[in-house]
Image (cartoon, rainbow, N blue to C red; front, side, top):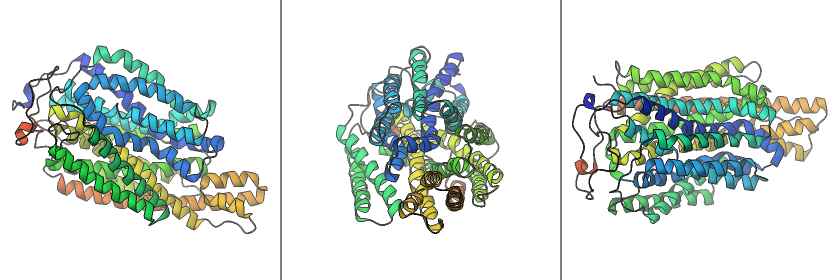
Length: 542
């Protein structure tokens, strides 16, 4: 039963809980590093393995797709078998799959190992965020803890190029994946000492058919969106999306009938919960798509080394961290929806600057643009995540955390696939190759900027210079188009946040019993849960 005691009466977290938060930050940093580090490693992969254009996109996308596909399952599984236990199992699996990914021998093997790494990583995110709700019962402290968690994720995304760039300066491309091994060893040692265990013994057994339906819903839809964005309207991807939608309806119908559903659909009865998920999803679409082209511009247009490109990304990391930490403080004076809307409006201005970047001398404007864009994205990362988790009852924290992570991971992957394909289409249409270029070389150059760089190295200096100049102009046009698309998206999201999140933060997560008739639950779990009553985690008492 949920407690209606005032938030101020909740016990305060001590040194052990804050040390435990540092432990939970490790897998958070690692997952975001794994997402972003491949942006810089891709040119090295292309040189070593010569993947096709489709294979290169799958190498980039499959990790995020697998994480998104398994998050609901892993979030619910953690609620039932123990969140700390699942976290430690995941740490072992991530260690093993990181090594196999690092030593992949072909593009096909790399795609397969990246998929396994994604499945393993899906065990980590919902467990870390759900455990925060167990460790920090006081709303003020929980808000700060979730802001730290979100900042770690944003920092890992931006610091990935720095760490990866440093490794790529001295080692082979596979070294970027070995980062996970020492991180997971530290987690395995510290978790039993600093982290509490929590499970919901009334959660029932995992419904395997629901697991299959959840995967069969997400993966065909993602595949369809990916292919349609790249090739336009085609029968196969259209049919895949239709299948995903139909199976998604079957998944929802089954969850409503089950006594112990894989995903409790009553979570979506909270308007703030649902709105925050949608805004998180679409904001990450913009972040993922723009990040792909920004890192490519730094390396292939500006000609920076991986380490130099990574260092230029540091300001955006600092901006997102600062914004994430300021956001909960700003909600003391301004409504949550206003704070998020102002942040997204700032992101819009940053993306507008990116739309005006030129291929020659465009680095200062690019840096200014993505720093502003990332700063504006900080509030939705911190407050949106807190709103999602704070709207759910304690026994559903794992499921809520999984849905929050799905919004972020799926959004970033869709941004890479959709906006990446948009930018690539602009690149192909704007590429003006010099006359006399061999047919095979021209086709390679049209396949992408990476191909143009390879072709230019094989041609006489004058002809190669012309190919490079044309490719840089075309790639920058693709970046500008992506900037426009992201600016429009940020503007729409800012308006949405200002309107639909006006009353967010006043409610509280309700237990299934409070929502209405539902499955009967046994007594208290092994580890007492934090009170479900009280204000949103990110918001202090007013």
